[in-house]
Each structure stands twice: as C-alpha cells, then as structure tokens.
Length: 91
Image 1: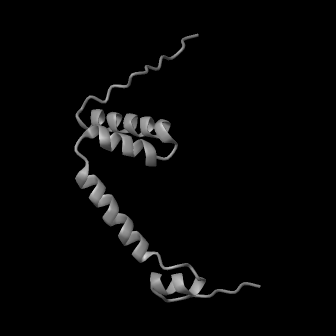
Image 2: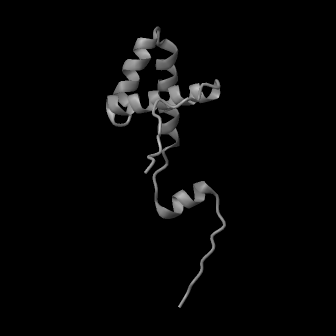
C-alpha cells in the first residue's frame, strides 16, 4: 500500500505544524550581538581568538579552514601548483 500526502504550506506554517519552536527573535538577537562584537573588534587577533572559540573542532577546524582558503586563493590567482607531486611507477 502506498499513501501520498502533499502539503502546500509556507515554511512558517510547516514549523508550526510539526511543533518546532519559533526562534526568529532569538536569531535576531544573536545576529545583533554578533554584529556589535564584529564592529567592536579592533584587531585581527581579536577576531582570530573569537573564531577559535566558536569554530567547529576548535583550532584544528580553524587550521583546516585556513588551509582551504589559502589553497583557494592560490588557485584563483593562477598559482595552482600542488605542493605534493605524483609520480608514476615504471615497471
């Protein structure tokens, strides 16, 4: 037996239908506080320290993201040389 139900509703209506809480005010408050903090940051070091605190996987995640950005910038500037070389084995 196969039953198909199609609901035509907005995301807000769907959220209410399945009983999820309304987090719009919380999100608004969070965005305002983050904006205030970022506007008040006086140096790159402050931003880096803050990023270390909130970054997934802590400092390891930050290093991975940093290496990703470095690689992406290198590729975009035409310096897409890989630091590792692959060699074919000849038999």
